[in-house]
Amino acid sequence: MATRLLNVTIFIAVLFSGLLAGFVTFFVTVVNPTLREMRLRQYIEFYQVAVPIFEPRVKMLYILMIISTSLWLLLRFRYWKSFEAICIAGALFCTLDEIILSYWGHYKLNEILYRVNPSDPEPLFWMSIRNEWIQFMYLHMIVTVAGFVLILMALYFNRQMMEQKTKSQ
Image (spheres, rainbow, N blue to C red):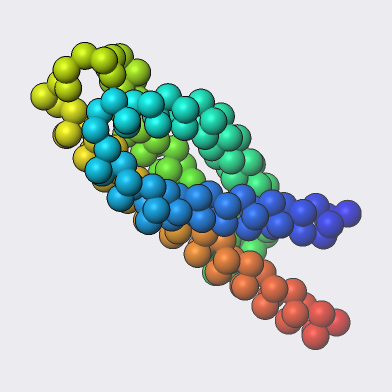
């Protein structure tokens, strides 16, 4: 039973950390260049459509990633000195860092953007807000890709450890 729970937990951790890393990488490489060229009115229209769609789903990904990596770490606690545990702990740290980046970066900027009326003249701070939002996306990409790489490394070390265990029996 514990092995099945571990396998499901690993599957969920790999799937959702890869999904978030892919989403953020797509956003940085495809959407950010477009956002950089938008005027305030276009940006706010995009923003008003995108945020309600993405925000609840990203929060759910964060919750699932924290639960799955924490559970994986707990299930492998007796191997706490292994490379696998170090990689899992690193991936969990990346997820928590991602949440902190989102809260202190994007959610604070989102509050400012919600207050901007697209029909008013462009405020002076508009370009700096947009550039700061885009810079936070680069930080998100670095952290999520690092977390995904750590999850993949933990998976590799887990499989290596399991193979050694079966060979010794």
